[in-house]
Length: 309
Image (cartoon, rainbow, N blue to C red; front, side, top):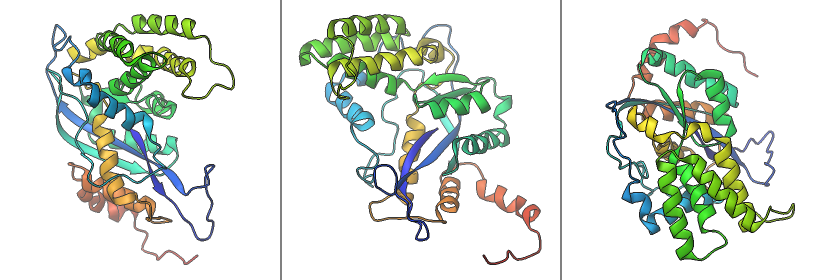
């Protein structure tokens, strides 16, 4: 699961957010059926070359960490495919269901869990829950998917490692540190990365209360806290051996697809946002969501017309 943005403008109550804009959050979840092989050994122990391409990594980091979703609408020409998952032994996606809503996080989690139940995920031999580090994502995992293997999106973890490596030192030294730490992260040696960041933090000093978000000491402290908080969700060699996905790129590309219909600098929604999100999600699903709606619609009918407000 992941989040996106759309603009909400209710003429009866045109409230703005804390940034004095009309952007609000929408939540999107993907339920993927995949096929893969279980291996006795790690099928891809070496960090893929995609993560050692300097320009590609910089672009990836800018995409994830460098721009606010409220600053601009998604470019309709953006690539909708997963950003980077070119490793040997990666799972092959077969079919997805999409859930999209503006409901609160607990309500959205129940929607996602309901769809997983309808898809029969409870009977799957291997189940994974993949997301970035947002606490809201892991609250849903604890409440509704706690029997799934929790996996922190590798790409998000990598962006924090990159940021900590490149800050406060020359590009050449930063890139050497990044290459070493990235391989450790890929190999599940998260404790070694944490120890290296602790050494850097000691050299830079602790961030002061008034330090900016881009101050080297603050960047390293943020990255260190991120890895420490999610340490138990980063055993990537074990996940690869089990044939499980390790990136949330599949849902992030789906968020872009939903945003094509819902998001724009001159596009505003009111009461129609929720039903349109449902319709877009059903349209993007490989499963027969439309048929499911019509098959169960008669159970919700009361035979009376709803009174006008």
